[in-house]
Every structure is written in structure tokens, then in C-alpha cells.
Image (cartoon, rainbow, N blue to C red):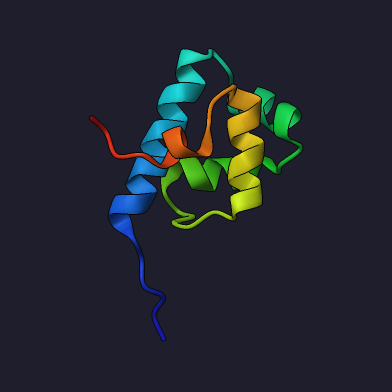
Amino acid sequence: MKKKSHPKKFSNIAGNLRKIRNEKRLSKSKLVTKTGLDYHTIAKIESGLTPDPRVATMVKIATALGTTVEKLTSSPK
């Protein structure tokens, strides 16, 4: 059975994560250090391969970036 994807949702997360990370001038490796998450976890979220990351994961990323989960998941304006 094929898993349903949520392209709009994960596109927002992927794009917002990449944008905010770059604005903060953080490499993925530095974000790994700050969050304690695996490099591949962050890479998959940022590339859109993980369409629905766990809330706890998003909280760690948001905290490390000095932002909110809402900003990471919001639609572009």
C-alpha cells in the first residue's frame, strides 16, 4: 500500500527550514550539533523526503534556529 504524501505541507517545512537555516548561516552539520538529531533526519526533512516530521523533532529544530514550529510549517506569504 502506497503512503499518502502531503506535498504542500512538506514543501512548506522543507523550504522554510532551508530558508531559516541559511538566514542564520548554519550548516546542516551545525544544526545537527545544536539539535542532537541525526544528519540524515535533517537532510530528509529539508529535502522533503520526510513529509510529516514528528512534533518533537520540529520543536528541537525550531529551538535550535531560534524560531517557532509555526514559522517552520507556515505557508509562504
